[in-house]
Image (cartoon, rainbow, N blue to C red; front, side, top):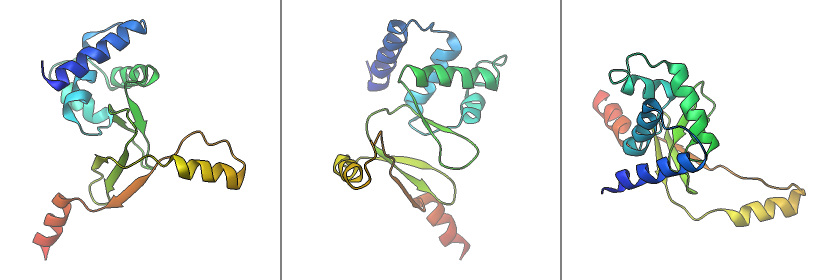
Length: 149
């Protein structure tokens, strides 16, 4: 059993334990997220699955993503643009985002719990969470820019 097959099996078990029905569309959305390792929008997921499920609507994709988010299998990422992106890696990690094409890549860095503690001490806030985003230009876009010159 491959790593993505194992992750899919664990995710399906989580859905069953939560009392969530495993519809073919829900299974396909989950499998797409787990195997693609990108941070797609709902529209991108819909387009990727459209040929397999011609009667599925974008609303169905959104509803499935909502359910997956509610049971903790997916994170919704909002970065100020109109479309949310979805990440099936729910472990603590950070993202680097391309300014040109919007590509999002995961990277690991030690958690910033000390920064959260300091923020609480300095401000008196009760910190619930934080988000670290790094922006730059990905290799593909750098090569395109270099080729234009």
